[in-house]
Length: 637
Image (cartoon, rainbow, N blue to C red):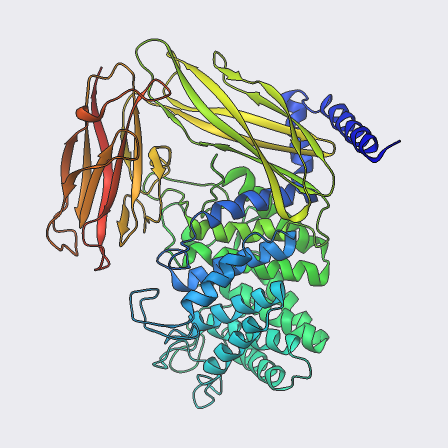
């Protein structure tokens, strides 16, 4: 038989095997839930979940400034997490972004460009812990690429940090800041990990090993580890435990530093100390509530700041190291539980992951979703991927994942949705895509066979299937789920579109209620609830799909600072409708401003009358921009 015929026959057999598996792939709802619960943590599914989450995170990466907007040390941790993801899964698509950041951001920058502090070059600043985060990020990049420039940069950073090791106060330890005002847990946990990683990557080293051992001994005796085995934030001026909060990242770096030093020394006493720290972290009255890692600021009457949003992910990075090092089933079960809780309870339809891994929320302190919370939760999903990379995986997403429908008084509304599938592996993959919609809705096609031809794990292959969803005019206001199930031989993945039916527009910005209306967040930010702002060259765009029988519409924005507001009927040609002409660097001009959108009401491809509203910065060079708090509209049909 000729080679071509063999190939066709092999593909036919693979397709037949896939279709055989699909024949039993859609059980009853109860059986489906049981199957999902039992398969959440299998290797291919874990890898697919991590891929979806990593792609969402990288959609926030700014390639021009080569960071994640408005957070310097947080950007280091997010990039390190992406490096962890690539190393764990074999996906290599984001190596270019690591190199982009290295080359663009290694220079000297004045305060306010990338950090609130001046950057001194080589990723160093007066914030000693910030410098250490970047050192660990470049060591991770070195592990991933074996490019010596990353190792050399880490050495440069470590030499800079060593200048702040000081035995004249508290007998040792690295100062937290250039002014030498505070010795704390995070700076010294980072130092132990950084120096031990350098030793483990430099053949014949004794210098960095000695420094790491000295730092570990000092840390263990510093008093920062309290009687319960938990790490408080730092030391008083009298060199005693200051009793400040036990943050998860302090505990995580103590575990991570000890693990790396254990690899360097194989000293069982170090590993025993690490285990005590780990057990204390998940013991009674510690960092866990109902089995889920919980920061004190995760309480529903509080909101974590931009730093606290990433603490749990740092803990999980080093908890993953603990699992890989000890192979302890209890530690592994805890890791699995975090990943499952995040995926089941703390994820929206767009694949965004929130700050509270239980999904808990409240009106005054809602669960927050941004790139920092995404990076944090991604660490748990990455840890859930087996050390031995699965040979194949199947994932899917829907776009738009959170469409808005504003139904007309009669008739149906059509929503075009793209079902995107991605796969890794070494053989052709045939997946059956089956779409479920609410009663009375229609989806075309309801099922389709998707063929994917992966060539390993380095670059997942993808395929797009256009879907047409028709929503009846009788659909009730609220959220409605459209689910796509993809099944192949031995693989299964589900994704959703969360369709918002709304007859009115009324939402606070910076909350989950805003997300469906936010057509393009671009590089805008929300530094808490009830605000969204865009400064410099950033912007954000809302899409209002007014009903087809709309005759007039006005939108009211609660807005301040240096705003530039533009309107478009096609997201291409823009008209300026509001502009602050004075340099306002506070909220003194905060007011409700109403815009008449009637001139922009034209019929779109889906039959609605969409209007796009974009907010940007009228003075892009001074670090302030347009800030919106609330959006409401008046519609006449």
